[in-house]
Amino acid sequence: MDAEAKQMFDFSLDALLFRKRLIKLLKEEKQNFGATELADDALELINAAGVQTPPPKEDEAPKELPPIPW
Image (cartoon, rainbow, N blue to C red; front, side, top):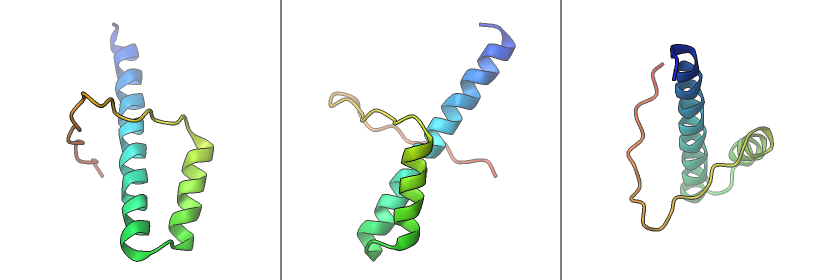
């Protein structure tokens, strides 16, 4: 894999991991604090805008997500 293809792959993977983490945080917010309008709107936009991430396989242990570089 050449450097440009690897960079595109890494960027795509980072975007998917960020999206997955964001969805998880929004769902936790809804569960902990009740269904807020902001969380509902954000989840709706995320689900409409991107490719759905598949659920983890049963035999696959959950992986720790890397920190988001800001």
